[in-house]
Image (cartoon, helix red, strand yellow):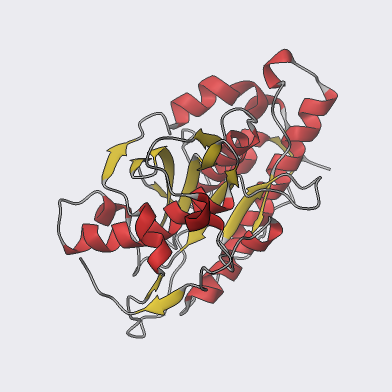
Length: 294
C-alpha cells in the first residue's frame, strides 16, 4: 500500500464548494442566551500560520505516514442548503481529518516523547459526539473518543458563505461586521457552554467553516476574540508547489490544540457568564431568524 507523509496528506483540500444561486436568505440562528457572547473586540491571531504549525509539529507532519487512498476521489457536488453543506463537510473534511488525527496519536503512542505528555487523543465529529447542554448543539466537536460522555473541547460551526465571511468580521463597524458578530455570538456561546467545566469558562478555541474558507478563533475573554487569517479551500497541491496552510491542515492543528489538557480551556475571569446562564435547563432551543443586521 502506498503511503504519504501527514503533511502531504493534509495538503489535499477539495476546491471551494459551489452552491446553486436560489435567492437564499441570510437567516441566522438566534437565542437570547447568545447575547452574553457577542464579541466586543476582535484582534488578529498571527500565530495561526503554517510557519508556527511547523515549528510546533513539524516532526509529526514529516514522520507520520498515511495510506494514499484515505480521501474521497470525486469532486464535491453543488449544494443549495445549509444541511447539505454539513454533509459535504462530513465527507470531504471530517473523514480525512479524523484519519489524520488517529494516525498522529497512534504514532505518538508508538514513539513516546516527553514533548507529548499531557496530550489526550482527540477526534473531530458532529456536535452530538460530545455532551450537549440545554438543547444547544454545535455543528462540530473536537473531543476525546475514549470516554462515554466527552466534553466538547473545541466547538465548530458550519455556515454557508451567504451567512458568514472572514471579510465581514474584519470589516469596519457597519452592517457586515454587525452580521458577523451575531453569527460569532453563537459560536462564542457554544465555546463557553459546551466546553464548560468548574473553575474554567469553556473552550479557548473554536472555528467557523464555510463553503469558501475556514476561520479559527482563540478567546482572550468571553467578549474578546483573536481571529486567524482566512484559510481558503484550495484543491490538491500540485507537484513542485510550496506547502501551504490548507483547511485540512488547519482542522488537524485545531485538533492538536484541543488535545492539550492544560490549554484547551480558558480560565474563569471576573464578569464571566454565570453557571445558570450557561447550563440552565430553562434555555430554549435556538431559533432561526431572517437577516436583521445591527
